[in-house]
Length: 80
Image 1 (cartoon, rainbow, N blue to C red):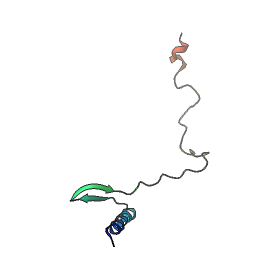
Image 2 (cartoon, rainbow, N blue to C red):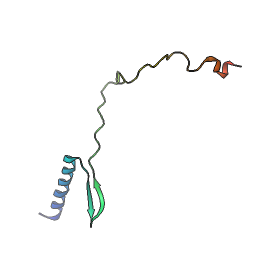
Image 3 (spheres, helix red, strand yellow):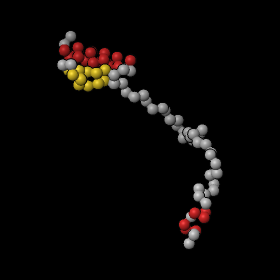
Image 4 (spheres, rainbow, N blue to C red):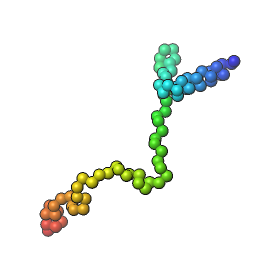
């Protein structure tokens, strides 16, 4: 087996180990760190094809949502 084949087999084995264990591996050269091989982050959750109802249960009514947030007497535009 030539050097390239050995190198490739070794790299693939390291990548498979990182994938399987989900633990990073630190690569060194002459005892000094040069790179870190880490597993990718988990994929984001799949979104449904329809956005309708996607926020169901995410909000709650905490009071009156119709009347103004401040008293009308505090509005400068009405005090002129």
